[in-house]
Length: 195
Image (cartoon, rainbow, N blue to C red; front, side):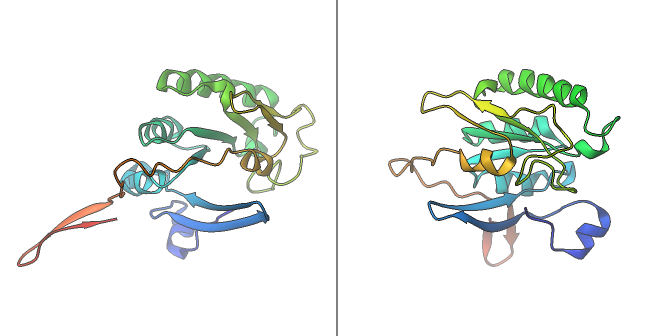
């Protein structure tokens, strides 16, 4: 899990810039997690982070915007982490989880994703529930299932959902796509794209 390293962002409880960190939990996989900012004021930075992704995980925040941008930018696989289950009323509420799954499923279907191919995992990032190991706090959660033509998958934790992402096929026959976060006009030099 990536936690923002910038003290000013932790204090403000918002993230302005993307974080990227390698995770290597299995000799067959090498994954880089990109934690893109979710705050509406930093949407440009979120687009830059999402444009580099092969799959996406969404949690509380601007879920609709994130899902739409991910689909528009070509992210084919999605994992929905239903975070902060420890702060629902009552804590770890099955009903709240099911309401969120229903609402998000309806929305991502309108965008173009098939909800049957999306893993919905109830988690508490703060307490680590269902992150690496199944949580005793959610005995009602029997696991997630993903149905796809390349092979079905199932599991209980967020780590298992990450493990079951299908490796993307490189698109070497298409134009190179470089994410831009800003464009500066500098006198005497010209236009400078930044990304």
